Amino acid sequence: MQTKLLIAALCTLGTLAARADDALAAVPTTNDEILRATAAAPLAMQFHGSTPADLSAWQQSFAAKLNELVGPSTPPKQWTIKTLSTREFPDYTREELLLEAADTQSLPLYVLRPKRAGQTRFPILLCLHGHGDFGNDSVAGVDDTPERQKAIRQSNYDYGRQMVHEGYLAVVPCFNPFGRRCDPALRASKTDACGVEFIRLQFLGRTLIGENLRDAKWALDYACARDDARPDRIGCIGLSYGGRMTMLVTALDPRVRVAVISGALNLFQERIEESAYACGAQVIPGLLKYGDTPEIGSLIAPRPAIWEVGRRDPLIPPAWAEKAAERLQRAYNAAGMPANLQIHHHDGGHVWVGDTAVPLLAKLLKGE
Image 1: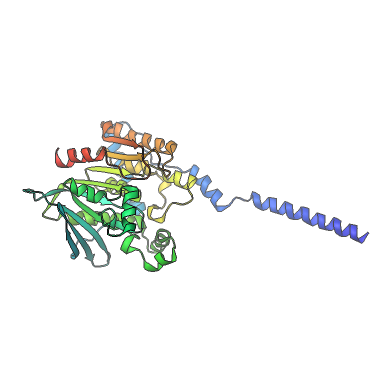
Image 2: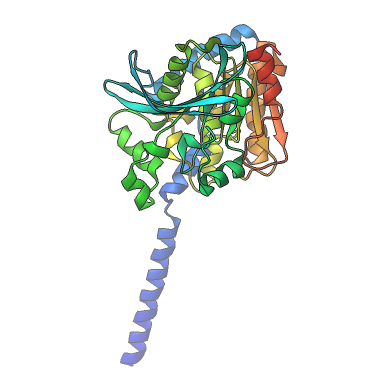
């Protein structure tokens, strides 16, 4: 009898435990709530106008909000220049520089200057890098080890070097927290440096993307002050995170006349809903209350922009890319210059291509 009672009690406890597990399973997780809120994000400042005046008014309002969300991004007014190295190649010179200013982290950058008989001033091309162990080295064509050669080969990553061959003053800054700017302890621990540095900067009221926007604008300020530069002819190009930054820099800096944005035609809504992770270097706190990447890209209109999209790029889901392109096109249509937006679909993956970019850059920046 006692055995039967014990068995009955255990069964009851088991049933109660199962019911408790079921109840706990029904409690939404943090991720469940984030996904729900992301799908229902207000995007309250999307552009819905149809005229140049509509677009201009919206751009002024959204740019102000975007600057507020990005946080501090103003470059220093004064700085000193330290030359770290200079290397001569048959048709260009590569300078490795360090910009230093009070109360601002020093900025490493390369400047690649063409050697052209009879030509002393060149259009400026700001060439921005993405993720990777070597920071801006790959874009500048630093290939003195097999590992660096492989990184360049995989993504056609040396577009700074490619563009100096085309006759541009290629300016290649190093972003945080990549290359030599990555903390050695973080690198050694294999910790996600983007996430760590984003969180730390938040305590200071700053964002990682804001720091990198400042540095891109700082590099451009420096380039415009050079005697061998044409500050009236400026373009910006980049792959992956470099594409994301090309979008942001061009959106918020009217000096840039043309942008080539590679491997970045996706939305933050999509990154949250469909991807395991979106790095801290891309986070703009509160953005989805007001818009997403198509809205940032729409600030570029009516200036020409090429968005390179690889058909085999796993980071750009086609359905989301189509949504982004539709919203971008709305801005260019309203500006009366629909052809200034080009979505270049190529058969590659997450790589820089440049097939349509090179002739467009030559037309707009060199007058060819």
